[in-house]
Length: 72
Image 1 (cartoon, rainbow, N blue to C red):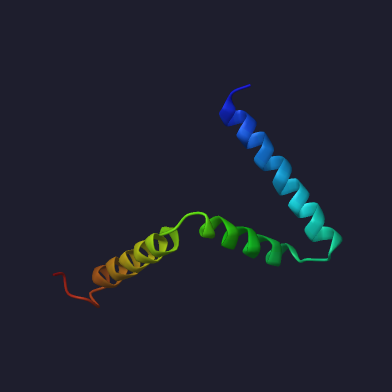
Image 2 (cartoon, rainbow, N blue to C red):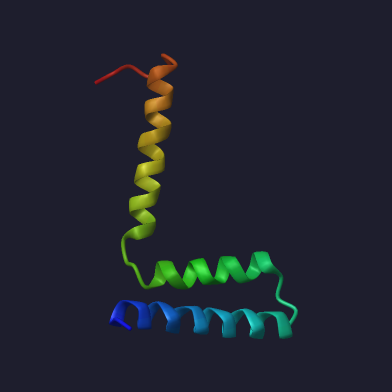
């Protein structure tokens, strides 16, 4: 087994444990996903800003296509 597949197997095991713990404490699936996403973002500095920038560029492009914003 490669290191990558070992890491993936360990990640799945840890996620399963986290899900079991969340279930045992009556955490909703939505709350579990939100907390998992927050933890992921905390490990990837700058990712949130990158995603927000991408969303803004997409929104601005849609507005340009609709003729609401002039092309610079």
